[in-house]
Length: 575
Ligand SMILES: Nc1ncnc2c1ncn2[C@@H]1O[C@H](COP(=O)(O)OP(=O)(O)OP(=O)(O)O)[C@@H](O)[C@H]1O
Ligand SMILES: [Mg+2]
Image (cartoon, rainbow, N blue to C red; front, side, top):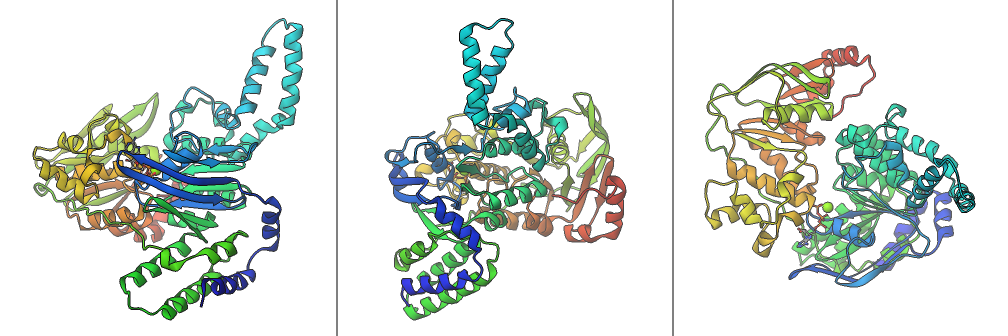
């Protein structure tokens, strides 16, 4: 069957479940919101993008995917005008407003939460501040009086009177309640800051919304809220994420960065994944006949059409399918890093004893009389409040001082620590080899490069400065460092953040096979379920500590009763 006939078939099938009002609305938008023309970008000899041509249409939600280091963040920066391409360009019709989810969580520390959100609409915020300054004056000149009336006019036009209440609704939706709205950003913890920055990006209903890994540091409830929000959001969204569930919930299209180009697929992540798997299989077996290929794809499309009840499809789907040239599609370029943590020496009998540990932060005591005895073979997942979990790991790693109590590590113990925030470790301009060498007893280049190679850095890639690394590449470097150091106790705070699916799979396997001591936090359900043999839930009123796996912990009626007592039945269990 030709590509055109598949397209007809597919369109007929999806017509059964396509919401009519949705498609009408998309037709009315018309036009194109972003056109990328012959875009190329090179860093030294390496082309990140070569002659990329792609269009983004209104009303669609594009999931931008690709391996760590493929160029996703860079592509968003080019769209936002923060990076100039080497050649080619991006055009966006005049008057369209683009908003970006800010990556730097600390950029607004000196502003209130409310101001930070309203800053999402630059012009409105300028007007508000100029107005405030004028009204604060005792006497106004005629000119200033005139200026105020101009500003008031523009303010009303931009719906300024509704600004605070709209910002409040957004903040409430993200779980930042009213008591926080006038506080300074620096008083908020990481997860709360991300939510405020999300509210900032969403404020004022931008025409184009760019989001770079928005679900990192969000709890499950906020992720669900964001999914619903993006699902209902009428304008164009381009979102980078490694979270498969999230991509499936929100995307109408997948833009896959691979081989220096961007390939557009109509459908959600599962559609992309399955079709690319089929293609990869077929490439491996060149002998397979063309009819078989057609039949397999056709049956997949049929299954997809039945399953994707929630998927919001765009009008461009038909065109895309017509253009789909199977012969030119390459199987994915994704590679799996090799991760294995081998201890220099195994743990002795005594591992860790923590007694009566207290820590206060700015007058509040988040950690009170904390007790913990860790034994050989313990693989402990910490659950509960994110800030508290990070605090416990930082104290155990010796990164911060405690007020009273004691932390005693056994004689044989060598601790390896993986922090959640690693920015301070990658500020320098030394290359990857020198960076890793600084953590190694062994100086030899080949030895160091061996560890980098396992983490997929080879050739010129090992000579770039560490301060240009992408989020996932930094994590791969940290994992190389931990492998090289050979610890027998691993302390890890959200190690899967930023990693692509291939790297997460490798890390998961390595942690399952690691037979020493592991104390970690992760919001990755599968990682926790497949590695932990002990669960410690940190609550504001004490600690639940059980030698059991995660699924048993989740189902335990005894734990449920205890949690209901602690939280008065109000809090769902989160990772
Ligand atoms: N100034 C530069 N010089 C050399 N290489 C650079 C420079 N800036 C970025 N890179 C490289 O470009 C590649 C793309 O980086 P980018 O941050 O866009 O990746 P990404 O797809 O967002 O990855 P991740 O999933 O890990 O966030 C990386 O390999 C990065 O090291
Ligand atoms: Mg990135």
